[in-house]
Length: 494
Image (cartoon, rainbow, N blue to C red; front, side, top):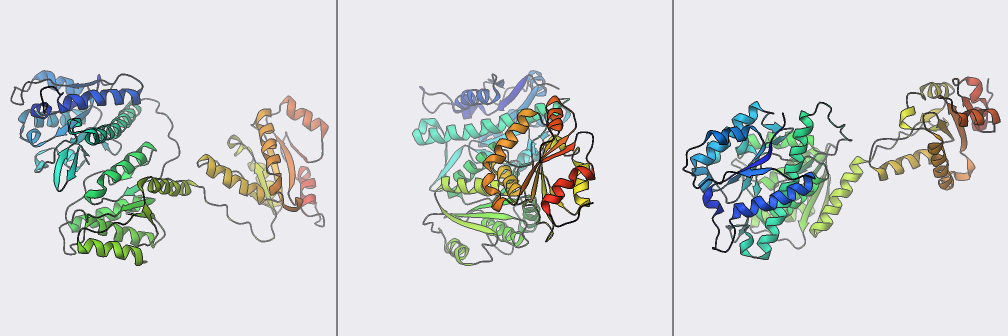
């Protein structure tokens, strides 16, 4: 189904009362800014609505229920008053019930309820389970142990953080809306190559802002970031959950700062930061996980046990297993993360050919992989190792891998099949640039004509110049005799 509204903002009226008479309410500012940012990301005017109710004690109207059925996402602004408001909690429950019947309550691994935590709240067990488990967007900072709401009225720093958080929220809302529309489309767009899953370990309060920036950056680049839901708070339930999530990840990132972070209830009394690192190190020792550990420059633990952990990370090889240990600023860390992800995306190097076997590389288009099979079989039957280009990976990785394949072959065959004259010209131009890789002139280069027939190919066939392998009507052993002779002049060819 299609939705009339992109999102509905559910909030308690008291949370929109301005701090001073000349200012706008917090929810009003939140709504207006999100409207602009989301419109820019969607490329159309975002349809966001909220009920301008006078108080949270009004009678819950049928109009609200009807509107919720036509809304894609619900943005729930949690606060102490929100939890006490029968109106607000009813909106939340009604949306969850309605969403379950209209498109489902989740989109992939994301909830259609977007949890915004304006003020820290407790006792959320009264809310629907999906809201309890969903990681929220925290619109407050902790200063000297006290939560401070991110209200632009508090100055430039609070305003910058408010806008930064909203920018990340708008991006995620846009991605959820796009995923929901694609799921409902009869012909969904083809997905690109899957991106690496990243486990972004929980951290202490002093690095929460840095962690959130990294999470937003990774999601903007198309990476799934774990954990995507609240983790269990008891050690016996937490450990298997962490092991399962780490097993899904290709890269784990650990931010270790002054604060030890939460300590799960359990016999070890180790912090969540320590547990995550130990479990990830065990997995890395099996070679299945790459890791980055970041210690801000000159960091000192607030408590003796945290300082001992920081010291151990720098000297204990077991705790560092599989990890690059970094220190420095946040931008350098982001650069290292994306560098690690690029390396993970690189195709594996081709296996070395058997000793003494010549290597023939077929330079072909992706559309010709099936059409080249008869030629590949003929070459292999003559004792050659055959390679073809790598087609999956980012541009830089593909270029590097394919350059290695060209440089490592004894005979290069430009397979002229589905590609047109422009494609052939481009490939020949690239080969001229790679002439330096032809060490000692040992590589011979050939042009293989393959179906379909074109005037250009028929002209080349008629000219029959040296270096041509004619396969317009099918490849034969006889057509390969010049190539085999060039690879081993002393070898008898029949």
